[in-house]
Image (cartoon, rainbow, N blue to C red):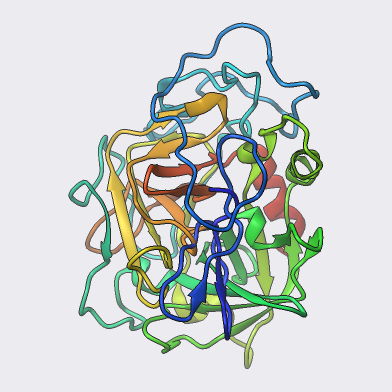
Length: 361
């Protein structure tokens, strides 16, 4: 699918959203270039090809910010660099470059071990069903929330996660949940409800005050929209949003903050967000868990995981090294596109880190 978000008729968006009930499907991102669609997801490749040969695209691929790292320089055992594959894909696309920086979660300790802490699942089941979303709850229940994206004509939903930051006001999501393809501009208004469940926002609803997406995404995505054979946007489909404080309180004060790894490594992931596709309704927190990721499927610079969550799940954090008791871990990628055929997300690296430094003031 192309951009996975969910349109609402009171309306909503997600980096990969499908709809049911009052949600209407928006255009979805697909791993292979083709005209934008708003219906059946396109099947992406399921294998992880070995990168080889010269770039096959007709434009110069976008590159990550400096420094560009090709070796594993991470001190901690956070996993395998690019899931054991070379960063440059067979089609010549580049991911965000690995950067030796890990932000710890505000509470709890990540489990630096291979695999994942939850049973493998691709079904999009409700995460910790029945557990209340209170301030002392599992960090996944408090930091993951639903984004509402608004333009003059429509509204959409996406997913996002509060991360540990200097300001305590930053949410990590997908770039296409911040930048609207239809207007080729930022959304007019974005609000965020951490811990959202069935219409309830236990930690309040917060207003965006500043936005950031990578220049690499804007460049490659514009070429894609103009018909160029350029899937370079997939490696940079991540964005950051700074939200205004409320009553002297920050998002982290209210909900906590998840850790982030900029190392392009993963020990398996739990993907948590608010899908609205198929039988989902973007009303409860759902998840997939995969202990072995691939990289470079279709020649694109994305991790791949088994997961049926689609529209509305866009922007969901891919949490590696998860401690199931506290919910503490490190986000290593975000949900960019997918659906029934799987989920795809760009690893976070130096470009994402630089964006955080620019926005987190």
